[in-house]
Length: 55
Image (tube, rainbow, N blue to C red; front, side):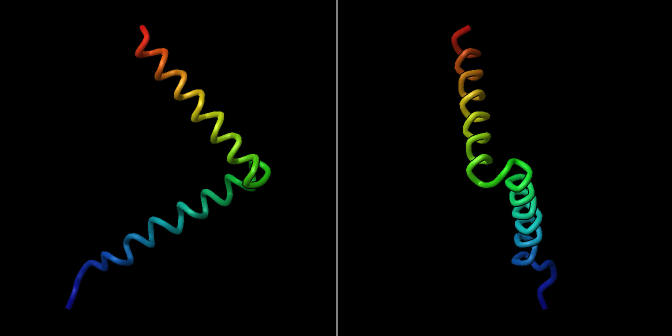
């Protein structure tokens, strides 16, 4: 008899993550706006890291 349920543990962390992504997309105005916001955040983070290395 197996104890632990490792295959179910992965799904238990995946389901809340998927729900959080859907809620975030709805709050940002749909998938297109969510991707634009993610792109802006990623670009700003890239610029910030680049400026840290230049100093």
